[in-house]
Image 1: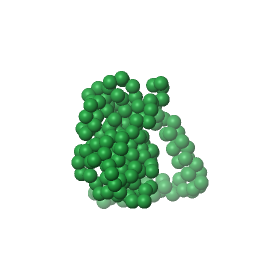
Image 2: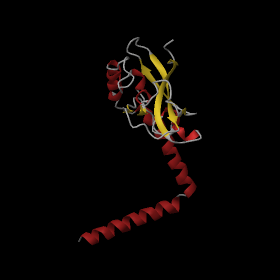
Image 3: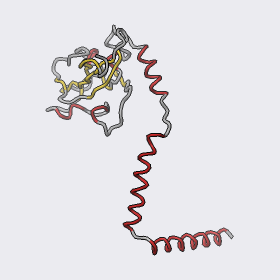
Image 4: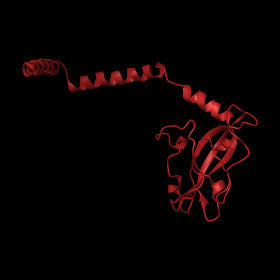
Length: 181
C-alpha cells in the first residue's frame, strides 16, 4: 500500500515537473529566482530581531573598571580577543620587548565608565614571540561576522608582519567615537 502511494506521488510530481519544464525556460526560472532574492532582501530588514544582547552589553559596560589593566573587565578590553600585553611584559598600550605591533588591527568602540563616553579602541596584536599564555580575554562585545574583517577579532593579525607568530594584544585609545565629541 505504501509503495503504491509513493509511486503515485512520484508520477504526480514527475508529470507536474515536465509540464513546468515545457512551459518555461531556464532563463525565465533564473529571472523568477532572482526576483525572489531581491524581494526577500527588502523584506528581511523589517523582520524583528532579538536585541537583548545590546541590553546586556550596556549592563556589562556599567560593570567595567578603569584601574586594573591586567583584568578582562578593564574598560578598554570590550572587544579584546587574545592575551593581555599588560600581563606579558608590556602594557595596555605597548608591546613587550622582543615583539612588534601588527601592521593591521581591528577596531572596537568601548565606553569608559568614568566619563560615560564611547571611545574607538585599536586592538593591535604583538608579534614575534610565542603566545604569552597569561590573562586570556575574549570579550567580543558588538563583534561583527568574519566577512567584516576590520570589525572581527578572530583573525591572526600578525599575518601582515614578517613573523606571523602571535604573542599578546594591546588596546590603544584612538579617540572619541563619532557623535561623542
